[in-house]
Length: 276
Image 1 (cartoon, rainbow, N blue to C red):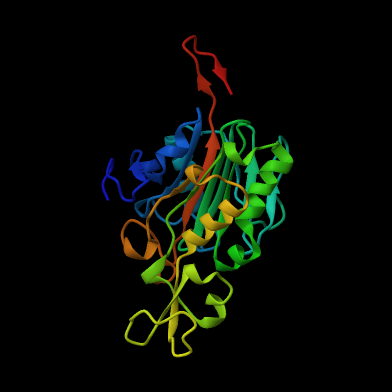
Image 2 (tube, rainbow, N blue to C red):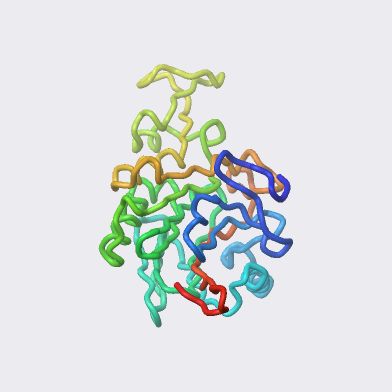
């Protein structure tokens, strides 16, 4: 990938050296919304995946400074592979584990760490609310995407027709083989049975050796079930396991993690005043 290229059908690699991120332009339309998944060249962003927390904190601070978010309050919950949504309001901390987080105020950065699991971004163009979720197979089974949408509706009066939702880089399809016990938790269209030679087997074939699971497709299906119109859905169309050097992949053996983050910045008008 190179800056300005199109790594996925709906994604772009943009930013400078310290804030290089992969994002979906479709979600950047509302004024002041900034989101993305950090590029692998920036290094590890997980405090739990390193013994050098100071170095990770320095990377985070540089990213925020280069992205124009210096001084922003960062909310990065401890993940639990579930469907808990943390609601952030002025002065509110996020002390309990959660796999999704939503807010509406400016100057707050919401972030989750990922490296195969699906980062799910949401922006309400009507109310200005926004959120991000970490959706692994366990979280998807628990309904984390639907819970994210429902939380936006109940806490910020968001309307599904005004929510834009995108699935970022994640492991998918041919690169994500799972056993029958996991595949059976998902609808058949998303888990393709494969024999030992890698050939597609008939649905329900008892001889299938494993199944190929497409996590982003599952996440988008949950969003549709929660009422998000198909035209409001965006898929980055990027597989983490297929882009070494650009994206980390736990299944491929990487220990580092990306930061999937979203924030609202105040946008100055022609007079230099800032507005929501």
